Image 1 (cartoon, protein in one colour):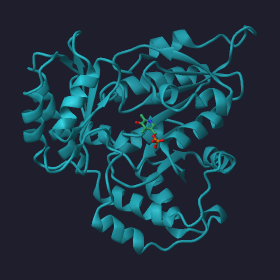
Image 2 (image 1 turned 30 degrees about the horizontal axis):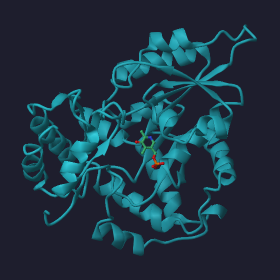
Image 3 (image 1 turned 90 degrees about the vertical axis):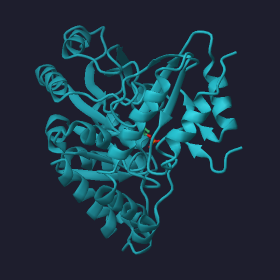
Image 4 (image 1 turned 90 degrees about the horizontal axis):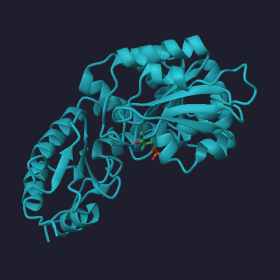
Length: 345
Ligand SMILES: *Cc1c(COP(=O)(O)O)cnc(C)c1O
């Protein structure tokens, strides 16, 4: 058994750093349900300014920010267009149906990235009373199940044009948007211009213990504020958590490059292995590999676990490795030692 466990299951497993804990312990707080927590207010205004958006709302999770956004944009019976790989569809407990009473039109694509033409073709005619009213297009960037794939601004702009033409709202699930921004050099304010609402997670690559923000117009965020209360997400002295988020925004964005470099190194180790069929080309901090048909993802995880390395599966033949703040420098050495001794049964 190796000395320390290396946890590559997700970028959510990080511990707050000593400097982050220090910032948290010194936070000025108040009752945020009454709108009186100065640190929450500062986090909301700094995050909104970063994306050039009018307002922001601090929430307990990315799932809640997405679910609130979907509820803001839809009415029961409406339809939401998203990718077949979308987190809002696959991993939010059926929340689109339960929280908003909306149905979903799934689009295939390249690692969760679909085209403006596919969106246009999926929009239902409003004049036909049989059809659910298409109301919202939701994008994910980076695409989690697409192995951290990033969208081009051109593709996002083309879909914005379809939304304008068809009267649709446009939401971005940006749980890992900071990874996309660092990887591509895209201007964060372009996302603020293109989308009606954007959700971002502070508790993924940025390393905060808890928290997500929904960004949008003052009007959308005012409605989101009511819905957060209805969903039970109003928090009292939340400034302690917001302080972690502020610290993360100020200190943990640029370092995402290090995670991306480690992900490239891990992909280079995986690609030549005889039991690996394909490694999705690495764009950010996620590495997904598809195994040869006779190899089970669970067997690979069990072997890695014996060497003190945790990874996760994204299907019976898919293994995912995620690089993050708490990954030690020795990760590539340790991964190499373990991966090269796996024998497919
Ligand atoms: C993690 C994640 C979320 C939200 O996650 P929470 O665990 O609820 O904070 C949303 N979308 C994507 C793409 C994610 O990876």
